[in-house]
Length: 291
Image 1 (cartoon, rainbow, N blue to C red):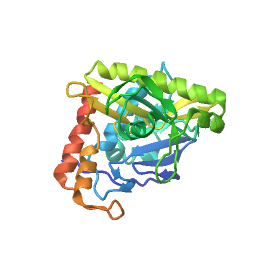
Image 2 (cartoon, rainbow, N blue to C red):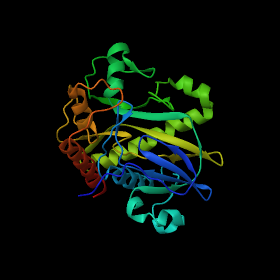
Image 3 (tube, rainbow, N blue to C red):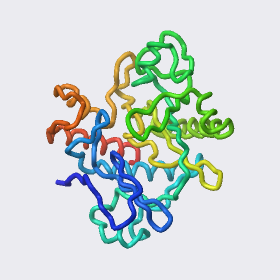
Image 4 (tube, one colour):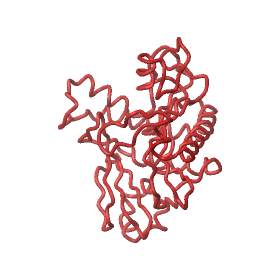
């Protein structure tokens, strides 16, 4: 049985260590290694979901390639033989979970697009009838499909939670031209991804993108349309008016909610069967989307 990869150390300069990814510098480019770590409620759990990092990497590569006519991306290669020798020496650990990408000047905005009313968007709609300043029709129910996808950006917080931004606030942060490009590209990528997914019986409820600048041009960065950055639902079981089952780590979050944990470190040990079920959900969404 595959073991979860929780830590990766390479003889390369480490730029950052995130909740999931280890980020290194490599010959003027960036090496992104997706571990199998899992975080919930802003706490990294002691156990991981085996193979999860591979799903995130391989789905990102799939979407970067499929959507490159809509928006350029930062991916250079996932072929370890084209990466630095330090990577090749650790091929058994890194294969399938590593991307070599262009170094970009990252735009400090999380570009969220919603096609359905769920999560924090549903909570805000019940309180204000809007999401991030976007007014929505009265009478919508939880998980309802929106009349059209909406751009609902947030801050890009280094710690803690991202905070909602209105479009006017995005303009203040990055300027009117860049704000309009972020919005238009985000909506275009969402529509293309949602149309493809729906053809495979999957609904893309919402997603978030990250962009960087290369020679003044916006480039899609980080990950693309993965279960970590997106909310995917099965079209066959979709029923508005209630929460939907997602293809992600929700089963882990549900177990933690019911465990009595106070959501502060240290987290409890998650049973192996819960982690295995979550792993199957990740593999299923990858297989259904990529074939």
